[in-house]
Amino acid sequence: MQAHRIETIIQPGGTLMVQGLPVPEGAQVEVIVLVKHVPAGPRYPLRGTPYRFDEPFAPVDPDAWEAGK
Image: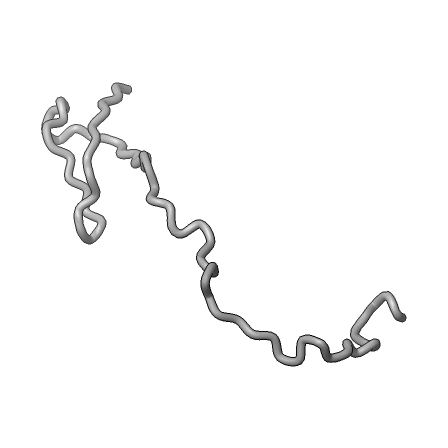
């Protein structure tokens, strides 16, 4: 089996175009896609998100704790 390396960019809609392969027309090939670099999303996606605590100083129900049983 021969391997040929060609770098290209995925087109809109996930289309992959590979041109200029040194392979005869009609030859059977296997295509393996290796992603070189995946753009990273935000590292802390919840940073800056507002939050609130309802009754933060209210006592905890003692029956909710397993250690108290």
